[in-house]
Image (cartoon, rainbow, N blue to C red; front, side, top):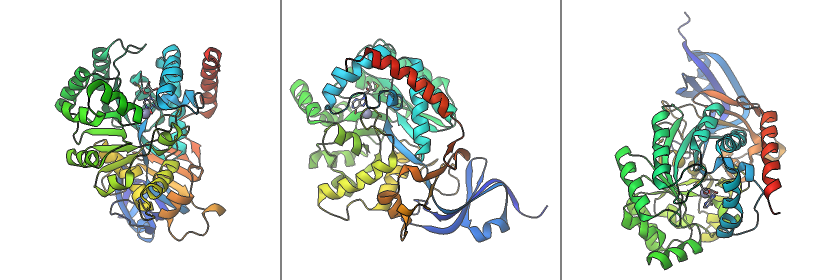
Length: 443
Ligand SMILES: CSC[C@H]1O[C@@H](n2cnc3c(O)ncnc32)[C@H](O)[C@@H]1O
Ligand SMILES: [Zn+2]
């Protein structure tokens, strides 16, 4: 015995940005990991005097950040990437996406599409995603196989599909799935699709279960002007007002998009403690509108970032979402100090974890949390010089610079190589679906 503490892994890096405490950058530090948990963060010079690790990884030109959390996606929609571009949301759904889903989406489609999404997300530094899609058991299986952390959507929509016949059937299937999986990397959210596809009765039913089980509700809300118009015409209320009346507004609500908000609505969201999943790329590509992120953040609302699905983005790239969120907040508020780099990093990590009720487990690099870690390699000429690594991560770097990813201490990406998924197999399965979808498409 040499008096050193035995641990599984020691990661030494040039910089560590732990997110908690806020705006800290640690130079030449190390993270000690044992049994998937962060045991210690200490100066690299002291680490070898205190710990004996089975594996030591030295990252001389890298920054370590908490794994990125994609707070809103439809992972399996990677298989429809680039299939329906340049049309607005309602036409996109009604004319292109729903008919195609109706024809092709089954359990195997969701398994293959979600595996493809996991590969893309791991390569882009994402360690956790919040999903909403049909056949969520396939999503759970794909997430487990990839080693990622995932919040699985117990999806509900008030029309029949190959997955479920009616709202009660969707709900029963989601609850069964939740009972079936007691996996340390999986959590569950209720996922009613949107105010224009879910009835009052269904929302009330979901709320009853969500309160009983203290489980988040993940829903699209205030995505477009059309959604607000349709709601006013059919109920006399704006969508958020309707959800307030139904009792849906609470700290358990993850409201996705939230464009076209009045000042009163921003106050309401804050008052009820709801979280927002901001999806800047999807909002711009579908011309849905702009979320008023600067006033929302000023109000103190918890805002995370999401990519939405690859059929409306068309990437699952959280570096892109961080950069766009920061730039859009500045452009729309007319204030260059709106949404600085450290705040964008927090949105893409800790805020997402808090929205999902996972803030005690992941989202920052502190002792006792899971070792969900992303390493970014700063050796490229495009990152030179580096005065401030937080600035580079948001404004300069891209996902191509992600070199290593760990979830719960397990390495999923090593020097840009996937450890749990086989890219050749993914290409093969994707080509199969592309052929089938292309054959039935009118394009
Ligand atoms: C009921 S499973 C999810 C459902 O949502 C559709 N979808 C994907 N992206 C969006 C979006 O931005 N707004 C609304 N609905 C979206 C997806 O195609 C599935 O049908
Ligand atoms: Zn969406």
